[in-house]
Length: 306
Image (spheres, rainbow, N blue to C red):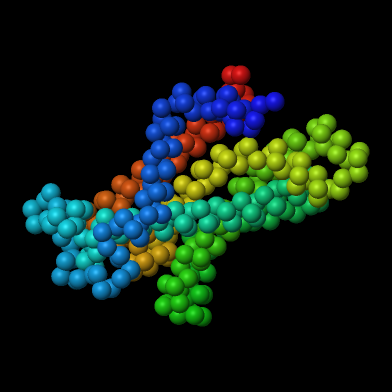
C-alpha cells in the first residue's frame, strides 16, 4: 500500500507544479520573501524600532550607487534616518503578518458561516447569506475609518500605535470573510447530496459531525486558491490603509507606511523612499497571484488532464 508521501510524489498536482516554471519561480520567490521577513531581526543591518540606532542626520541619504550614497546604507535612508533595507525587511514582516492574520480570521468566520448555510439550507442559508450581503455593502475603508477613529478617541493615539497590527487584522478580516462564506457554501451544496453523506446519515452521525468530519474536508480544495489570492489582497489592503493614514503608523514600518512616508519626498529627489518599498510590494503580490492562478487551474476538475 502506497504511503501518503509516495502518492503525493506521483500526483498530478506535483507533476503539474514541476512542469510549470512560472509556478515554481513564484513559489520560490514567496519562500524567499517569507524567510527574509522571519529573519529580519537577525539579517537586517539595523533595528528601525530602536531609537538609539537612528540618527536624523542620516536622513534621505541616496542609494550607495548614487552620488552622495554610503556603503553603510546600500538602499539609502528614509526621511527619519532609518536604513531603507532594514525598514523594508521589517515592513515586509509586518505586512505578511497582517496578511496571514487577516486571512486566518476571514477563513475562520467564512468557513463557519458558509458550512452552516450550505449544509443546513432553508432559513439558515437565507439569513447567513443576507448577513454576508450586508457585510459586502460596507467598504473596508469606511470600517477602518470608523474603528480607527473610535479607538483613537477612546484609548489615545499612543495606544492605537501599540495595537495597530491586531486592529488591522480585525478590520481586514471582518471586511472580507463573505468571500470565504460564499465559496464554502457553493462547495458544501455540491457535496451534501453525495453518497458518502447519505451513508453517514444512515449510520446515525449527527449533523455537526457530518459537516465537520466529512463535508468540510471535501470542500477545502477551493480554499487553497482563495486563501492564496486573499493573502495578496490583505497585504494590498494594509498598504492602502497605511498609505491613507488609517493603518500602520510611520514609526512602525510596513510596506504601506513606508510608501506613504516617502510619497511627500518623491518629487524632491528622494525617490527611493517610496520606489523601493513599492517594488517589493509589487513583486510579493505578483508572486502570490501567479501561484494562485496556477492553483486555480490545476485544482479545477474541468482542467484536469488525468
